[in-house]
Amino acid sequence: MISFEGFTLLILFFILAPIIGAIALLFLFIFEKRIDLLENRNVKIELEKELQQALYNQLNQQIQPHFLFNTLNVILSLARLNRTRELVRALEVLSQFLKFKYKSTEPLISLQREIDYTEQYLEIQKLRFGSRLSIQLDCADDLLSACIPPFVLQTLVENAFKHGLERKMGEALLEIRISAEDEKVRLEVIDNGSSGMEDLSHEAPPTEEPQLEKSGHGLDNIRRRLHLCFGDHAQLSLSPIEEGGTQVLVVWPFVFCDPYESEVRG
Image (cartoon, rainbow, N blue to C red; front, side):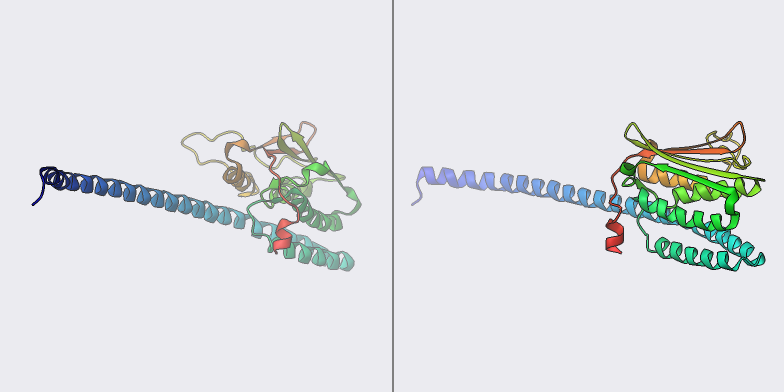
């Protein structure tokens, strides 16, 4: 026969068991909801990353045909002038450039690699302009490892030729300055050609479409890619020079980028 104490414990067990079970189910329900919330949040983050990557790839593709067509025009001009030696060299440089260009799929590369790309383009232009083209490039060695979106410098240099130096009679001057300023990289591209590009630093009136520079999507593309990579910490401005020419300034945060990492992976 069960004792009084045993009977009391049995009653308490039957009373408390459903309550404990309900509490356990409640905690399990909350825990599952929390897991679902975290999983949904992770999915959302991944979707946003994929969307940004797709947008970046789309923007980056806008520049590539622009450069290719301009370079082919340079080569065509050399062919029409029967400058065979320069034509062969231009084709060799273009081949080398494309080899590097289409191996690069990173959203950021080292400034050293960006300069290497640009020098391939500049060599083609040197073949075309000859002795009347003067180029000065100043960059501190400790900045060569800074990260930069690919084809930023090359696009600015290309614009300087297409909308400035191409129209210049006499000596054509191009200056590239890369310096450090308050833990940021400061890139300046200066030419003495005509001021053929519009300053995008001013916002268009609300009723008008935002204006692009005469080179098409070049500077607007750079702005948008810089924003994708660095947010509001990067900026681009363009202004005419009083004595003639154009100055483009790009500033972005200094972030270390291994100059050889992507080549090793490739």
